[in-house]
Image (cartoon, rainbow, N blue to C red; front, side, top):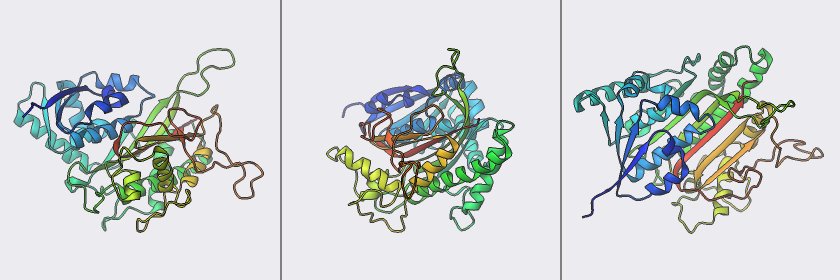
Length: 388
């Protein structure tokens, strides 16, 4: 029998770089991931990169390969003490059947530190002050830790919409500080609560089980990332010709390791022969029920994410959304300075001047025809809202 192929990764960039995803599609490779002491500096330097997309690629990698993690000492000490402020590394810690080595620690010491970090992570409560500007709530379904108390009631069901709104309102108020007026913060809380509730409910309904309906047996992980970040302004220069600094923003991201939109909707795994345009239509039907005529949704109890409501909220907030599932990557932006596409005419009798419930292709930016990407498990949705 041939020896397994060894693939080396260095976090965070190799998992953000899409081209690497094509190299790990085989089922017999072993991946070695190195977490360097320079991790925080490297991650903060790439402010425009999507950490939640890196999480989705890590979850995909875990389905195809055995993973060995090599931690340098300083970053391991910091992360294992406060895992929830490192979203990508928190998911790495939550993965099952993964071998961890920590520089200067023996195997027993490393295992003890990892177990303590997991217990801490699963007991962590949402911090509305975001003292570190970042936190992740990990739902490790296949570990039996899929219902964190801040998001689920004692009956195992997601908390009510008004409870979501209360959490988001306090998060926004504290994060906005003096950047946003009180009246604006009220609008923010209501709009963001709509987005969070719709996205997370969709993940809870369709991201926890296999196509058979049975729970995902290995590395069934979902999560919510809350982060104060910076994004490049669409206006690269001001009127005087000087470069415009990145703008402060609030990021809300959802991820899961489920079947993905297409497989969940069609009740069968996606095949290479599936037309990309069909996958694109199915994604929209998952996001907005009945949006695409001719596609029958056979899933019980599915009512759609409410894409129009989400886009309307983002229009109010001048924000953006990116959705990655299967082989496709869609987005919409309403950030100041960006061109507005797929909008209803002002003469519309139903939604004058409102956004049409349709995403654009992330690569080509201004068209609604999808580009093909490497196949990923589950889905990730990233919402960005400027704080100014």
